[in-house]
Structure formats: structure tokens, C-alpha cells
Length: 295
Image (cartoon, rainbow, N blue to C red; front, side, top):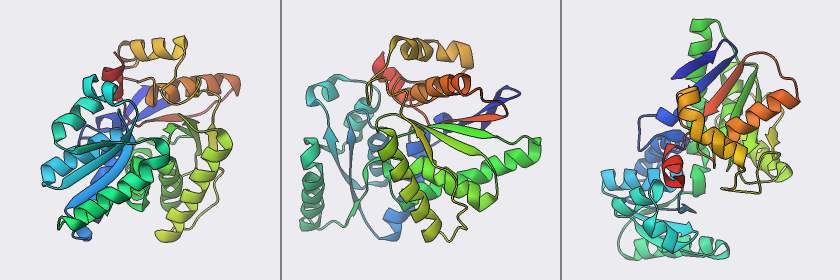
């Protein structure tokens, strides 16, 4: 669904994607589900933070499908037990929750795979954030909906802005633009990584997606801005907080301070500082449950 804010600005509404709580992680998990089924697996293991949209989506899918699920989380276990939003849904899903320091996440995920195998299950290893080919494919194919919108309305974006985290959403959009022959500059607003690392991750995955899915790569410029980190992941300033609080009344959709709000805030600042003109598409990747948790 694409909403029109005004003639130059439209919003791709993945925040209302109708699966597992919505957002870009709900879209990715729908594609990852096919891979789990295709490999005959009945258990899943992944990782994320205590308010991970990805972990929430996978835990809910596992509950619906009757799969065993282990989530290896980083963050404060005490906060996890009392927070709402994604943390609440993960607790309600019945998934096994394991906490680990960042340096030990890989080892804990490997241990969960070993434990499932020893218990007679066939587990599937899912990278944090859905940063895998199937997650990227979800966004390659999402560009088909954008192409349809462009064809039907005679409107085309000159710029696409989005929150850039693990990089697979941005890489998938870049590959999808190549696949469907659309021209637009894609500008990621980093929510955690510094510019150089973020751009390298997106560039590498963009190349990997085009190679794997046999897409004629046009070598689009990879742009990720780290000017709006506000200190790092889950950090924000007063202006971003106020934008988030006022978002539903000002724009008709919710923006959180971790992902979509940071991207929208960054987009506004980037447009002003770079004197951007033309048609702009804001890709709303979700964050409603993060907004609920931050209140």
C-alpha cells in the first residue's frame, strides 16, 4: 500500500504489512518460511535484541506453525521480562529465550542447533534481522508493487529513503529496482552502523542478491547516511522524540525512535541540507511495536 502525503511525497506502508505484526521483518519472514519448509525443518534459531522486530515475527510464525524456536537475545534480561511491544509478544509465543553477550551469540546459536538435532528435530539457522537471500528476495519482489503503482499513477520516485539496519532491505530494494527497470536514488538512514561499514554491507549483499537471482546489476550507488544516529542504536534526541510522539496526528502513521522515526527524521534533514527536489518515496519499514515499548 502506498499513501500520498502530498504530490511530491508518498509512503510505502510496510508498517501495515498484514503478517506477524507487520513491518519489513514480517515481509521477510514470509519468504524465509518457504526456505524452512523447503528444507523440511521443524525448528528455528535466530538472534536479535529484546525489542527485535525480526525475533518477534519469527517467534510468532513458529508458534503458528508448531515449530520449536530458540531466540538468542542480547540486552538486559530484566528489561525483557517487563517491557511491552515485541518483548511481550516474544514471551507469549512460547519460544525458548537465551541471553548472551554479543561475543557469545554465535556460540549460543550453534549450541541451540546442536540441542535441537540431538533431540530429533531438524533445525534451520536464521541470521539476525533476516539478513539472508530469502529476506532480500522479499524486497526484490516488493518493487513489483511499486512498479505497478508507478504505472497506474504516472508517478515515479526520484529518491527512496528508508531505515537501514542489517542492510538486506536496502540491498533488496536496489536489486529490485534493477529487476523492474526503475530509476531512483536509494538513501538509507543508518540506525546503528557507521557509514563506511553500512555501505559495504549493503553493497556486498546487493551484489550477492543480483548474482544469486540472475539480475542484471546496474551498479547503483550505495548511500547510507550516519549523520542521524543520535548516539547509536536505540538512541534519540529531543527533536526525534517529539517527531515520534506527534507522528500519528501529523502524518497519519506511527514513527518510532529506533527505526522508522529515525529514518523520517533523517530524511527531512537530508532533504533540507541537500536542497533535494523531485518525487520522494519514504519506505516505512515498521516500528509500531517499538513505539508502544518506548512509551
